[in-house]
Length: 119
Image (tube, rainbow, N blue to C red):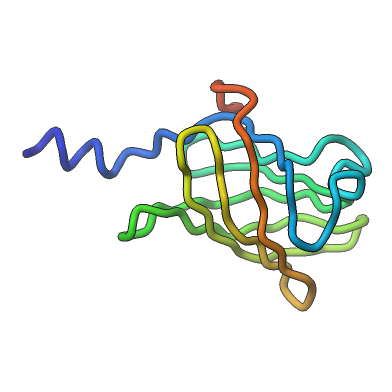
């Protein structure tokens, strides 16, 4: 019982995921500056798409999915928001919200199993 409970609480989604699809923007826009991505290491992460960059704080929810808040910038202007996703194998599927701005669903595929170390 103890091992099962510990396994349910562990986040085993560490790695780098390429954002391959978003509801609001096509792949060319997503990859405007560099390929869009989500990087996860434990409860922390980074995201990038178009001109949006952010640091993520990730929490597992009771239903087995994940919720996050993020803080960063959009074209050098301060930006923040929140989102949610589920992990199915090597794929993250979710939605990201920009405070006072757009929101979009996304699909991201794992391209690396090694999560980055955040300072």
